[in-house]
Image (cartoon, rainbow, N blue to C red; front, side):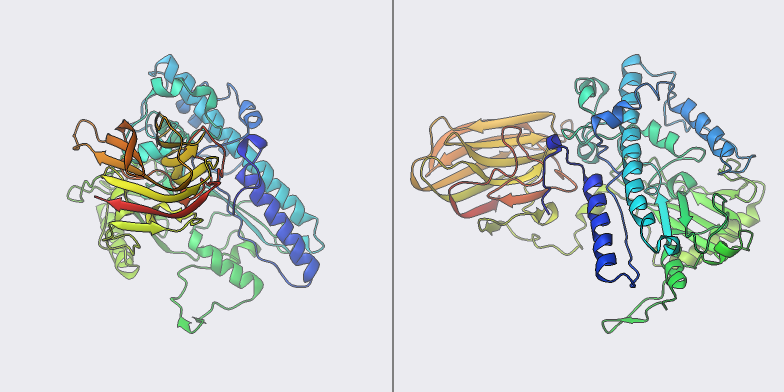
Length: 564
């Protein structure tokens, strides 16, 4: 679905999703008021890019000037005051890989504090709209008998913004770091629609207080332990009380099945189902002190491993999560051991003092890993996005032909033109007045677009919003049938320049009309969400010279891509 308005006109995904969910629930209650409804409501927040309306970001101006070390301390104090963590919980130390706030230059402090202001604005904005949804549910006639399970988090705060933060998260995921100097030039735009901004690692670490590490590190609770709130007024009377039984997100589905009295399906559409691995949490509603029923749970992502068993956790940390390429192997893997019944934050490693318990848990991890197909371990990240074994509609092809109006082709299913010589040609019919996009892939985070403006053929390449290369013909396209071509020749790769580009030539009816150079091009991926569009540029636009969708006003008979 295309958004009904632009970000400049006030569009935000969280608001749109909330409006849609409220309307959907109202329709269900109107059509079948006696029939229960089920809603799975998952926002894009607070995943990067960290976008929020300016007035929400402004609410937090100056609130994080004290820095991430101090914020972690303040957070733990509040957690203890609220009774969310045991009084004896220790604050785990800052890893050596993360710089101290006090040691940062002043420009870095100012930039990093504003990154966190944008994140906080995003979170508060999300909180407000989730509140709207809950208000709508509470107004229903059967509100008291509505079970709400609210999980805050995405496997811990994300470190993918790198140590410096970035105004383009896709750039850092392509292995190209951002700089404080570059971001300072755009500091006032952070949090707005122009950038794929993401905060520095230090704030991800602070957001996981009091735990160690963060998202993509499931060996430690900073990458797995998220807040959860359950509301069910008809059954759950002790409002505001906590439950401390150990459970995992896979326990949500069994909880819902038991709560509504529906058996787990054994066969769906004739297909026998793998049994659900989870354990219902309904028993904790009636008895907050009941013995926990989840005895064991393994964790693994990218080589990080952990196993929970009867109050103990064995954990193997496997490298900082902001290094997104390459493999470090498992030869020197070390394990830690924690008793989380006494040590909530995993602050005290007992591996040396209790080696037998560690061996016991390592053996249990091995059993669980074999049972749930965790092996073989794979510690790559970026490389897994281009797994050659994944089903593909482009593998082995060098020629692609697209009809006009073919839009929203996922980037993974578009011609793989990254750092590779190729051509884009199109057969058009124009009256000399027709303008608009012939083909575009990507968006504001990076991409390319071939379009007609003021009657002239234009090729524009967006290098992560940092550089824009525009090559345009000087003369207008002729009337009638026209063949336009963009030829790109890639320069030889160089180790000291992983994003080296190449030369562009534009031709009309076989005659060269313009040429230019792309000094840098995207190595592997333009965006996580944008697409290839023929005859339009949907989503955010590659170019800042036009507005979406900028549909081509003439006729596009076909667009051809040729890889060389």
